[in-house]
Image (tube, rainbow, N blue to C red):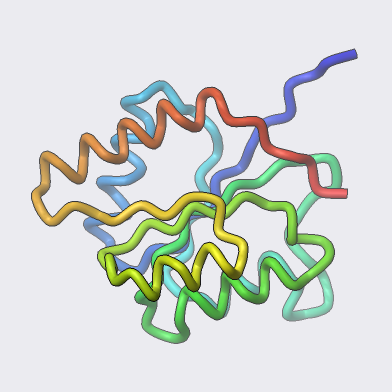
Length: 147
């Protein structure tokens, strides 16, 4: 039986304007999945790894992470590393969505296991269009369930 598992999009983005723009344009591309927003890394890691000993992840559900690298409390690279080195979260796809386009940083993220690296365009319209394209990508990508 081939059942469709809803994918929860976990957005880790500290810039409120960017977060609204990302959500609005993902919705415009037809994605109606739950979006769980975090504005800093600590609470996001607690959600995934259970800072209080209990993870917020639900067995049998699928997750996809939109990760900004420049966060107020920790580096997105550190979050990526933790997610990819932890058994229960290692298969969750991570889309890095950041203003950083430095080659070394891009390589480092891929080396750590990011699945897609997108540089946020500075121009508003280009940024909105990039997110709409990303939303279209989400309509066809297959995401594994959490075990």
